[in-house]
Length: 387
Image 1: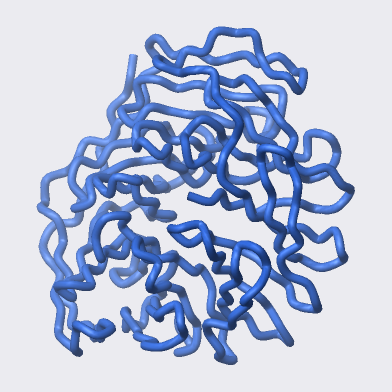
Image 2 (image 1 turned 135 degrees about the horizontal axis):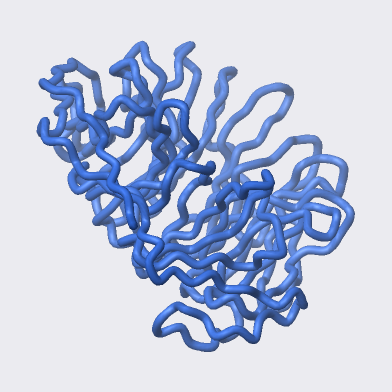
């Protein structure tokens, strides 16, 4: 029997004066931060009726078990490129990997500590965070390792770079005002714009794939909630208003929904979904065990995530967006970082120390074709798969 969770919403509406200067087409303006309606949305976990857990063969070749994913086909060779972080040279650097043959390109070198790589929408460039002389800034580098460019230059920390859907701008979080705020900058380094201005912390920006809208995390109302900012209308909207903290918003590739983590009091984080406007909130996992950051399939129909097990390890799961189908992949392996889908939706990339060392693997969505992508004695992690 499935249970139904209700998230109580705080009544009333909130008016906040905020300053937003949007590059080229917006000027400083007062903007209204709107709460949703006062009706409590139904939050429900995935039903366990009919759920099938896929048991994989422990060999590298994958499983003989027929998958429970309807319409799954035998995947072809993995496409795209994978950028990841490795300390095999004694310091965290970026590498570019071909998932079809595991050949790698060393992208960055020197004395900087490089982290959090993110592909541009066209797959030609990578934004990342680099720490040089105790200063953390955002950089851009071409996929082949040339044309390295320092995008931000400030004594305070600049982190969490996020590409706009057209690849022309990058949003990032900065502590340059002695408080975490969201900024916007052109990819050529011009047009630096502060988007949020509040005494609360604002972080984790992420772009809608089809609109000039940013989702982000904020404590503006004294609770960790998810907000959006529309760059065209200069309007802020508060999407989550329940008493439980929310975090890690991730847009669906079609831009219609946002997946996020919800933290009920005294419980573990669960994965919930809502429409782009904040309506129709529901959960696809319960709050018995901790769930990691959700990852959307390219067709916006599936969510991959890692979930804590009763023994304290973490397993890899995929769930349909309505929560009706839940499948565990590679059950013999612990997943140590949040998974990522391949650009064609055929594979899922994950990080594990299954062989006694932190490495990258991919597995087909039907739990076959398990492949090891990296193999050395150093740490390999923080991957990002190109579009």
